[in-house]
Image (cartoon, rainbow over all chains, first blue to last red; front, side, top):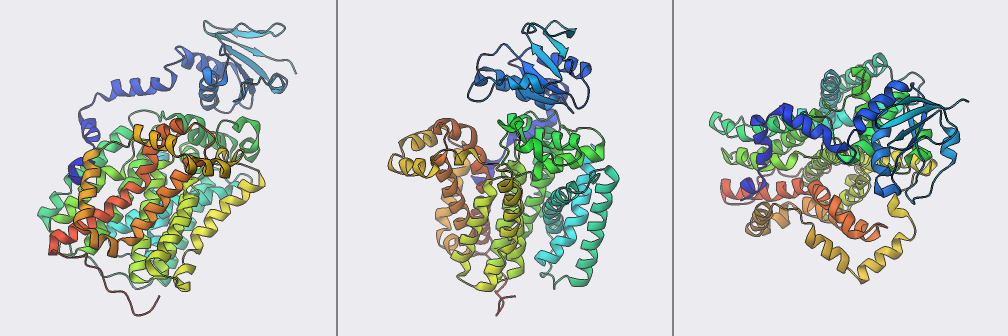
Length: 131
Length: 445
């Protein structure tokens, strides 16, 4: 009972799995709620420099209603950059984040007035702030 | 991939002699197993120390430092190693064949763990993110850790695992989030090798029974959660539990100290390691009584756990469990346990056949289990009690907390609990009696 009850057949099935299909499916899982987001982040990576401090804008109204999801993935993917959040866990906005950022990026939102957009894509924009 | 393989090789190079020094181990498999656990911990602590030196995280610096550490460990092992445990008789060839399913499970796990980049939310938000930030920074980024960027990433969580990820990336020269999965298979293999040696030591004339027991434990040693800390924690906790078990049986302070060191490394891996250090002390006292020389063996774990507590306290990296009035929440939860019981009833850990088998095995071997495996029972029981208290203390909704953590938390103690039942059943099957143990020495060593 212990031997068969503990046996995890899933791992044995891995010998017969289509690894390419599985890899593609698994790699997309962390972004499935934001279609197009990986491509947007790749563009941001290309348009920014190592050491840049970035503030992220998204259309999400609440922290747990999507902003956390988007911000955490951006913070992980944008290697060498710091990604500031404009929305905290208590849903309070942090306007100071704009002042500390070198770059403003937005996913599926319009750029705020008064900033010069340096890259405009289908799903978002990048704007470098003059310091 | 090369960074991951270098980490595994260096962990073995450092850890095997340390294990020989600390555990009296003579079995090759167990030395490899303990070596991976001690060595992984040593490399994490080395990364922590090198982080304090400007430029300390260059590829040349970390590999050279690890090689020097390995040379020192080998020199110390050659000169200072105590008399080894008696060698184990070789397994008969037909019994070795029965180990094939365990090897297949490990190989299948390696395929799964490396098929894609780690995708766990806690990897992206915490363990992996910290490792990536540290690696980009070229050192532990304390300012970031304590800063506002960490409001969602549990800054209080220990950093052994992110330091190992940073080691891999530094050696590799780029961030690696796929090959690191192989580390999880290696740690699982490590604790399984240790358990296999202990099973054989408990029943040397077991023939085919021990290989079947090892197969029973194989799926419990591997973790499906790649990229987060539970896999390493499970292996460290399992190795520690088995060393404390042996130390209390042999009244050997050296083995208890080695087990305690693994507990301390567990405290560097997850916050649950802090309570595991306490649970280990309670289990040693409950099993071997109040023996000051044995209790002194618990110091390495306390010192290691405390060492992580220093920067944590200095930077004010607080756990979300401590928010508000945790004691008040615990007392209220004890008075009204309904929500916790309902959540535990809803979000079970599955595998009814396994748990039924363990329960049945525990009933069959109840007398021997209580007499011989008290350490494992007390250790796991105390740790589970701490987990339940943490659920009562949480400021989050209990149902949510249980849903997303209970199965992982239970996996920490499932391996040593299953080992306790399996080792008793193995002994009963082999000779119809209690486990064969080497007799305790006359005095404490």
